[in-house]
Image 1: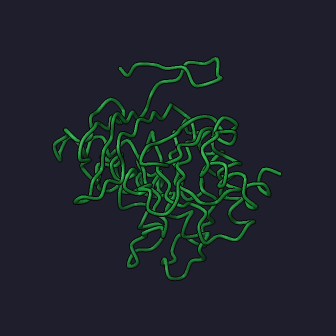
Image 2: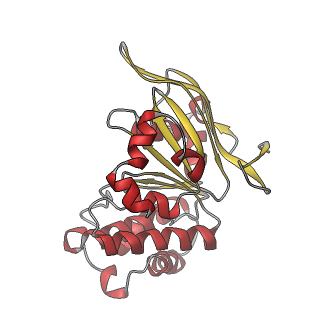
Length: 263
């Protein structure tokens, strides 16, 4: 079992779901990360932010086992991802879902078939039960029956996001990774998607790791932030990060958009 830790300024003890220790990532002679230390706790929503080229996606890929870091460890649900063999990693991958920025739906499959795909691959159930599960997930994210038979090319941007989220939830994950979940959505659609994430976190006991540049979204739903600056991660609760003295953090949250979102 994972050790427990106390969330900053909180009285409850929460388990570490993800732990990153001394993470280093290099591409040739270029160092992207130089000693990142970060924890993600059960049922929290962690927002990863940073400037262009700071390696937010690289960090996410390390958590997903898609990239082996130059050095350091990434532990997810008690398993050291970098040390797992392909078969063992697949067991870990069954415990998380991923929503990619573009949705990454299979263009040749309908919405229902997209959500069915991971269930058919991993579940031992009757075809009828698997379809019922897929339909439940689609209803859960707010899609109506009229969308189930449509192909991705026939969907709006918001519907694509919701269908991709339903697919990410298909196999009952403990963790959801979101890459720019509100990118391309209008303000109303983005706000509705934020509310959906909060609803799902509360009702499914999810832990959420989110990369986003959407200031409104970050400040609305995130419990903590991890800011990638100077090749390390500065993490903490919202108010602690907003008040941090680092110049980039001050510029980011204290700029025009940050002040507007805070207001």
